[in-house]
Image (tube, rainbow, N blue to C red; front, top):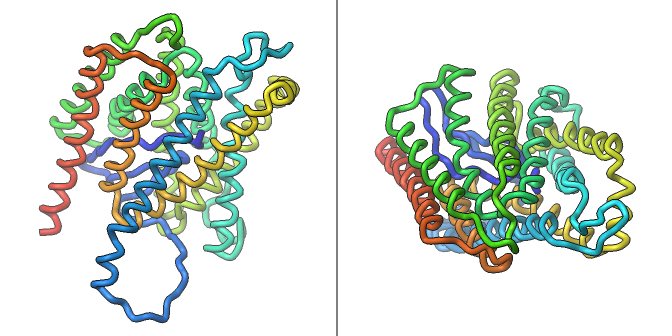
Length: 374
């Protein structure tokens, strides 16, 4: 998973803070910043009419790329962690034995992409970076733990429950912003947070399904709480890095490199210390398709990050948030159909509440930006 971490479709605006949009690997992109995407120089004069005609095509390209990348990533994530494969001596139940390896595979490809991007952009991988790699270690640890918790939770909760539950991260985000940075939030955002929490609770309670499904258990919800807490710390620490070393001196690719450099060391160490490597090799020998699934997951995580950068640069954070919120709803539908997660009418009502509030937040933010521009 991506760092694979999924993007949060929440528009949180504090009185003392800028809007941040997650970029898919645990790092943030500020609303007033655009990720740097190198494009070939053109000797052709700028033509506004031609640019306007191509804009819908570019949006369709970004929309399709994000949907295909993250819908495939979510499907593969659930397939790896919930399917019963051929049993092995170390995995007699036939379940994939290591959530840590899933995190490792995503980080492995992400760091390759980051190295190439930083090299192209800055001319050197490390020499021209203002922020040292060690500055990213704390958020790399929290990002790794959040990704691990997300994978591990799928043994106990269904993917739709996990997806809806993630939306409640607005609560700890606001709490940490208030405690760590003194950020104030309007009353309306506390009301929105409360409604999201209610919707998540309804969906989780009424999503318990048959014996064939992954049942919602306390341990699974504990993993999801771990995910949310670690994920919130990650964004807060990354913001601290931006403030300390200057936002102009740390671009998204350098953040991606810094986070994944530390994360790859942590996940590798964890695999060795826990003795997972022999178990994984044994499992891959008995189930070679699982290795293919992990490779596809890593690839879609990396392509998803690149589409995130392009979408925010070209169309801004609100369009990106709409796309990713839509992707969450589609992923719930796909998971429910393919993996046969039955949902009651009450559970669907909970999901409607959550996504209704999310789209309301998007609309509110869009109108606010329109008013500022006018």
